[in-house]
Length: 283
View 1 (cartoon, rainbow, N blue to C red):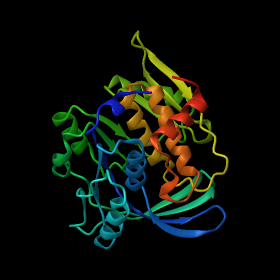
View 2: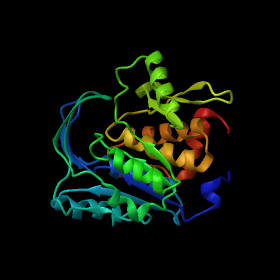
View 3: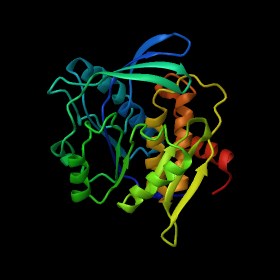
């Protein structure tokens, strides 16, 4: 199966957001710590991209975390860690207490300094930007505006959960509001129900398409599933320019993330594509 990403190497994907030190209590009462957010997105993209493509995380971290984070990401040959800096010695610390597999109480104990326009000037030639902030403070409107004004790249913005209390009709109203303001698509994850994509149809109306989940035989850890979904969404759209296909890749990467606790859960792209064909049929 040949697509744009396979036929053309040298692509750049910039990933913006925090790399928090997650302090996690599972629904079974287990306690552990690990890095998250941008880390998951970058590694998931690394699994999907070719060796000649590059992932450029842009993040601010604590000085004590910079070395360990770069060591982790440095084991992946197509991730450039030069955009991870600690000059302000500020970084996110997140406390996550899971009530169920996919329900959690989240508290942010420390905050990184925001990513400002100057931080992204070195990656304005990226083919796509994936923004995975925990709050709108971390990747603000001025930075998003700077990207849109100085780059023709697609921008994937993970809004991190403001839709969780909305019903189907409210989601449609929100999607119409966003589409009316120039957003290409609104894709909402629905946990075990997969996700739904809203986008303009051929007549200018709002199309709505549900994309079923990919089954996970044994859910181990759902932390980072949304960050992984964003990675798959970005890759799928960049490769196919199709919002529904992009959601299929998003579901695949989110499912892979839930299947294990470590970063080696992400499959090579050919195996991910077999997983997608098995779930959704041939394209």
